[in-house]
Image (cartoon, rainbow, N blue to C red):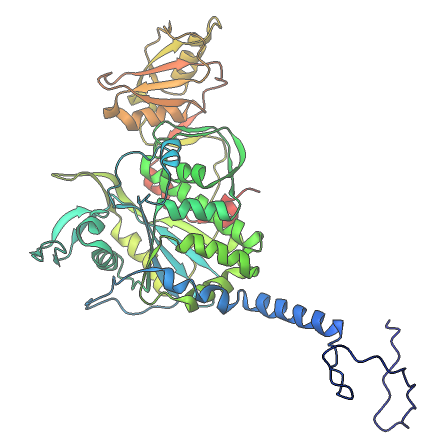
Length: 499
């Protein structure tokens, strides 16, 4: 209860004020001039509090991000586009990830295995749908090897007209940049794209670092010699470099690029969780820093301005992991051979159009939680009975090779039944050596050996070699399952982030 006495009513009898002794005139002030009144401290405190409340209620201040608008590199992916799909409800953003790395140092390139010249092609492609009420984000991954017919287009380098022709989806960017990419995606999905955002390796790493890292959980070790990723099982806070290794790795499991897309979805869910739980979006200065990192080398369409950033910021203030959902476009064939193109991905057209219809109608993709497997069986792409295995003991433990050979045979693998001692001694981590021509079989075998490392050996032939290390604990059961079915399951953000 306040102890401040109540102020007298304007109708109360005036009280006589006590006269204060006259103060000596300060230097520079004319004697007899009125003394300027000092603003009470409580007024300053109230003004400061009000400013904070206004900024917080707005999510961010317009002035904080308005200066960033001029720094966005602009593209015009919608120029001269005709016969576009009708506008649906909500907002659709085509998010494209490229392999640009101009802002990275030579040391960063070496450390995170980013050597070689960038191809300036699309490494990742997602449709991000933000619902009309701004309370849900639906993310659909589009496999970069999707088999498509490119529409007729003009070659930007020669000016010549190119007729329609078959390619993989990521070739649309290489042949015609953002404009041809948007046209191709719209023709595939019959979904109108409202905005285009293009992010490169540098932008990705800097954004993660400004957020203070992103927390991810893994139930088994993850190691990819191509990207340099090496994570033990457990919970980790990944900085920008490690996060880039995580989302780029394609050689960790039996499903290759489909598994990589699922990890990208898991990472994006964790990124949303980090941004919303750390209250970054309520801190104008922090939001400015994050936005600067994002926009440092991003390219966007001409209509993606400060107002759109503010709209997204306000929408995500109330986001939780459960507000986001992730899936991959339904696939009929994950390995569809096409002469001249090699192995491509073929969509399940009926199921794909059902998915995109939900986005057009602004409906959630997830209707219920996906059923969990009753045991710890892992899905693989190749039946164990089709995989021939030679087991080698790389440790000093007598009989370990025989035990692993028996366990793999029990799990269904076609072992030789004649394990040997490896020429490599003191092996710590179990290795799966394979011929690159049988990479799907190798990943299926590695799935049965948690924590094992895949090593390609050209010319080895169809027989896999398993060099058992001291880290071996048990052989895990595997089950043949179409990897496309697993990838097409809808995951909510709260189902893939750390509990």
